Image (cartoon, rainbow, N blue to C red; front, side, top):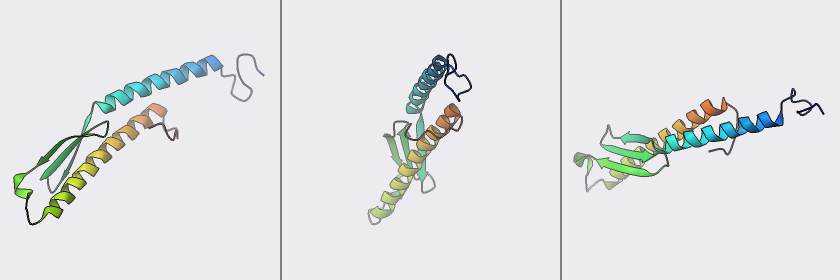
Length: 113
């Protein structure tokens, strides 16, 4: 074994590897906090329904325009709310994935988030 490293690892020092791992962990924690503090919006029906979720994937606001409320067509309103929720959650998921990609340099790290 090479001094201060492992064979086949280009002489990479284990201490440097640990420092890099710790730095990445700190960056990931910072990124997670930033994402959790962001808000993501989804809309449906041309803006008739608006849903806002936090980066923690919690619904924090739902706005429904009065003219879209039709007691004879509750199913349409339900579909609009569902669509807006899914759109907002997808935006949060994409933002998290994009931030992780920046942090990891595109490394495939399944299970990290």
